[in-house]
View (tube, rainbow, N blue to C red):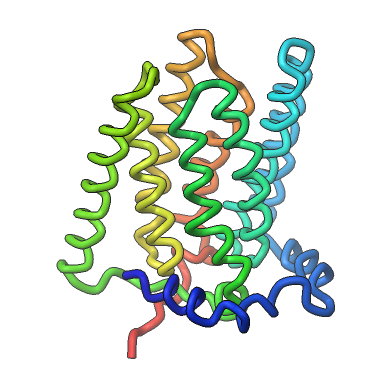
Length: 256
């Protein structure tokens, strides 16, 4: 289950050469070309929503609003890049993770903050370093019931741990907070291992995260930027389910 982590960590000097190599920035820019029209529509649609949120909240919380604006736009670019088999998700994910984590801590939404830190440590950094992630991406299915059980147990343990940890804080939404964080960690592990079933997890995570931020809004601590971005995540998940060009609908690789 953790083979890809081990591969990168044990060959770190070799993988680090993938970063800032000659023509690297041109390569990153080219990764944004050739996407489907719906993907570009989602980017533009989210940008408009983020501008509305920024204008609405900037006078009251300028720093938090700017962080949410940057994080909301780059996080959407990250997940849309994943659906289009693009290699930009590493940097977009890393920068957005830092911004959203800072926003989460400022709003005392600890699950969102630690979720993004988890993405940064366990996914974004490895996506940046691993050239295989950028070159020949093929989805794999969970082939056996044992694999389903392993990931299911991983989720249960993650939820128990996060629920216990958040119970010791002043988090007023510990159930949804811990559930979202556990789902995010499990989805990130599935994504790093290139499993198609990640989309089921991320779709459910988007729904529950929207519910979390709606509840947060009703309690007076919400941020429209994150509600907007997670709503776009859900639309992107639907695109992944039905688009012929997405990773989820693409050819399934066979294990040797």
